[in-house]
Image (cartoon, rainbow, N blue to C red):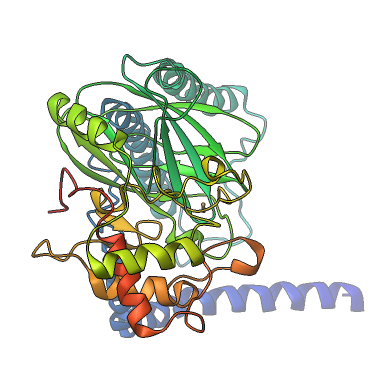
Length: 401
Ligand code: CUA
């Protein structure tokens, strides 16, 4: 035997030995697996805990209420069940193949199973089955995609994304002028498909109230049409879902669905203009507001910006506060405006007026978020402004439960 042949033979022998060792090693591998079981359970437990924390209850796409959200939920469930079926089938097939074709002690390790590369029947089968499944999903999905963009029978509301809160404008007489401008909470009538015209005043945001409909981007310079509806009265929670800067995570939203009669009452109350308060503290707060706040905030009837003869007076990047107290939350729905006993949440409101950037990351120097008044207003002045704010508008039609 030549030297070359010897080398080849010994290499083959080495490979066989190594293989045999590996086969015998399986016991050890199993043992390691067994000893690591605690580790595995810890890992799985943590994962489960993590997943369960996703269901906060407030933002729950798995509990759709509006018809649009239900349509989306139906498609999601259909595709999820199809994916689960495929996953189970493939998983079972892999396990079956592993067991059936495993190398047993004594098998020739050089022997390969029958190769079926280029088998037309097999290739066609595993191409056609997914094609048919995807076609089936498409047929189920496409009508809903178009349906979601149809115009509904309800009122039209302009939705504007701002850094970092949502503004809602109602043009009731359709003369091109907004009659009601509110923020953080979009009030809608029960049982009607409300038409949204979504845009943005700065960067791209995304409007999402999962229980009422899917997500829709708010893009500056564009108007996206969308619909929401609720068959029952209630408050539904949402979030901005497009990264839009520092306080993206603090840009929340609520939809308040009211019965037709309550919706009408709400609308009429929102049309009322504000007037100069009579209480002493509130009057002082009103005066302070006129010095420090009106370059950003509008209050219809008293501090209207353009109506005061200065079109640049109000920046257009801060909420209209005419009916502040008729909302359940403030600062991009980050804070509750009322405590559980329905008294006003004065502590948070006062701290917000005092030092907003301390409560919510922002860049006020770049017109992104409210500036701090910590160095400008003293304690009694803050109290006066908070007294004034409490005179703005009536109670909310619905309170969070
Ligand atoms: Cu707005 Cu994220």
